[in-house]
Image (cartoon, rainbow, N blue to C red; front, side):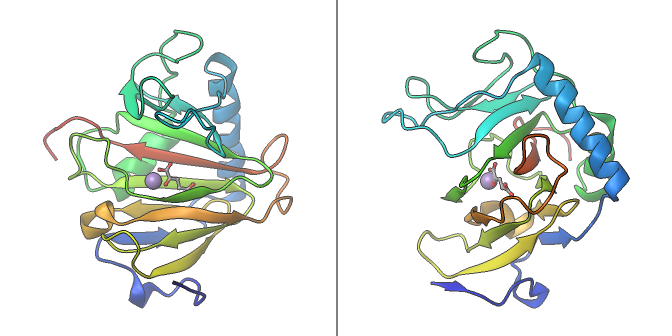
Length: 214
Ligand SMILES: O=C(O)CCC(=O)C(=O)O
Ligand SMILES: [Mn+2]
């Protein structure tokens, strides 16, 4: 069951925060510039599902010492090298480190920043981020480009979900109880924004992977 009352903070789980338009249009353009520079050295690649090898709907790259990858043979994991080029991932842009410092409440830096590119028709099924050894730090994510419908459920699979509309420049934090909540992207309003070169939506998701002092 999915309710259509969009963006109702009184219904958000503990630890969930939505910062509408955290980044100005000029800052969003600068972030897109940083993504363009990053994917020059670490190009988007097509991730595939563990076991079946079915392609995910998004294409991906990463910033930071670790990157989240998935493929048929190895499954979901963090690796320090790009699976196609064998090169280290590019460094996390300063603007994203500053965002983390501002909203995460975690003194240690994020180790991974996944770059998801949603092209026409892309979405992301409901899931919990649980490939990290340390889930005390929150997940902090940035939306750029086309608006999206973010679905947020509870900690149990199959429970009710609510829909939150995310626009370019919005930031979402999944901490506390929300760190263990199901979430996904049910729809992208493709073609609404001209920010992303070649169109669509870019999501930047920062996570800690290993235990650290918080
Ligand atoms: O695109 C989004 O807003 C969410 C992405 C996400 O949940 C993930 O990459 O784990
Ligand atoms: Mn996620």
